[in-house]
Length: 118
Image (cartoon, rainbow, N blue to C red):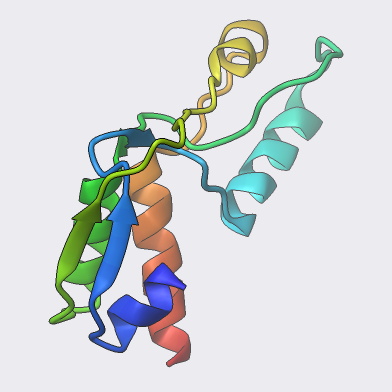
């Protein structure tokens, strides 16, 4: 919904704008990991969190998307009592030595792919 509003130059309301965000993946990132895993001779089994690395504040995510689409949308910060969280990739980094792409890189990649389809 946020992306659609920004693309259509409509104002967007965001919550917890100063909280960090990394809850994003794309198919490219999943394929990167599958290729990585296939090349490994041995992987430690377990449950791993998988999300973007280098979390960034949600306000910066919103401004980045706005910039990519050259949107005239206004960003309206709203307060919220809901807790924000980031997903820790420490286990996948420490145990498998795999670093996911950064939050910014995945957002840029997704937005550019979407802009090509328009």
